[in-house]
Image (cartoon, rainbow, N blue to C red):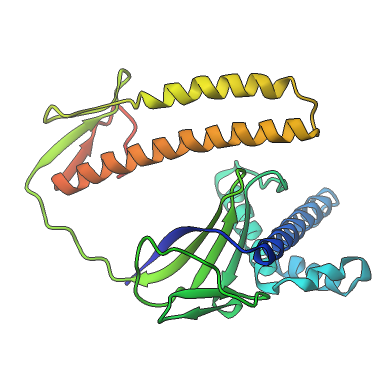
Length: 275
């Protein structure tokens, strides 16, 4: 059995959206507070860890000025500290990618473990902690079993998504007898030894022109104004479109390579296309 993430888009009700916004804000605050605390302690020659951050969170909840932290589920708050812990471990291991403070204008997210949501196996409906009604999620990809955790996110463009982590039995693909070598090119994205060439997607150029135009308009707006925020969302939507096009193209290309060949040998002279 393998853990597989099933991601779906959903539209929350007004009450659910308000609760999610409040949860996102609390998650962001707890994460940033722990990061600031760690930096402050480090400058004083002290080290902090996950246990220290959890103690600090408990202290914050008891303070009258931060009592609003009790209005949301404690699980996403604790998970945000775990994510910060992973970020620090990755930084110390690689030496780069120091954790950054979360911004309210960026992508928002909250992680719920099994004890923070209810899942109806028959209807496949999921109800998050502190919510009365289940989320209206259209399951475009059916799955069996119950999710062990769910990850709710909101993009810069205001779209809501939910990812459910489910134990799934993966059926192996039939073995193909074909073997190809792959070179990542300059003019083309990739060239295979059997003559198949994957050209760079041209449709992104159209969106890149739109992006440049939208960014020029944004630069002329007064930062923080309503018009600035409206234009910022337009820019974010174009960025999202370009990213989606690239992901879609990559999925199609790698799926074709995996389904039609048994072995893929990327050239040592070029970077490997991860399949």
